[in-house]
Image 1 (spheres, helix red, strand yellow):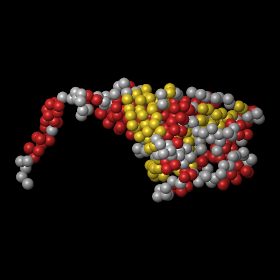
Image 2 (cartoon, rainbow, N blue to C red):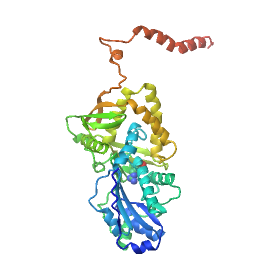
Image 3 (cartoon, helix red, strand yellow):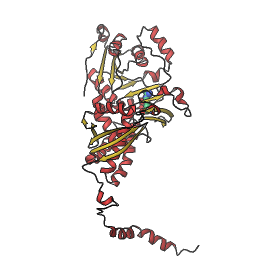
Image 4 (cartoon, rainbow, N blue to C red):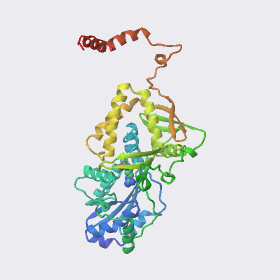
Length: 419
Ligand code: ARG
């Protein structure tokens, strides 16, 4: 894990600290909501605010958000990079589970929340903070994932969600910032609400709230329109070791680099766009779009390798376990009791999921076109219809007799009933 703990104390924070106020650790993004939240928390709860920006692979910001948090009144501010831990402990387990919520959404936002919750709890304990605050509203899944993630790790911490308590509008927040001398960066107003990390990005609101409307071009930020993607396909090779991708096009690389590179190649070919009406945990159906080029490609490749290296009953049984994994991750139960045994089962299935998969990327599609593995269960001698057939044809007759016996017996005994 790369963690830059270059925390800096606000120069004039001594007086506030001397007051011995309770402390709150705020999950801080540098955006409008969490910037005004610093002051709101101080005023409403009479607390000292420690602002923590947690990087799970979202695009870097040129703005020094740590310095700005201090100028806006935080007594401490940090930026911590947990991208490596995100990949090893959250993304790879999801890939091993072929995790697609409702068969389409790779859970990119959902699996980052428990890690952020974990870091906030660690910092709250180290700082002796009584509260953790986050900027989620009352209508989404993320509030549930944060709140449940936090209390599952430390039931003594209390949670404050300013945007849940303080029902406000963007205009009112800007007004509040002006009145209170809060430094904010007002970006061009976007109709969309977005979230982004290394595993993918999500977009909702605006015109997307009409599920009949095709997502307009400005929804998509990280993928090329499939219609404008190259006219010739791009072929890639992904090598897996025990279910985890370890090389791209023959080059060994770490997880973060591999996902970043694949995101670019697949995104240039228009792969990874998802348009979905999704069931939120809070009972609301919502229309969202996602861009997850690397996730979509890797899950397809991983499934193809499993098809070659796992027995049929394992694949079928695992499918049910995968659904459960998705539900736990989506519903904010990452730190609940069931996740660990579920992951232990999935890990066990991955022992022979090693090999290489070739994928063709072409105008929005990622298609598996080749696979090989030292542990392949594909036996050419058994499957061939050409020379070299090793299958015992005579055994088929006896097998089918026994296999069909229950049906044969039932048909005979039912035939005696008069119509
Ligand atoms: N619907 C997705 C989920 O619940 C994405 C949520 C995106 N979050 C956001 N604050 N815009 O995982």
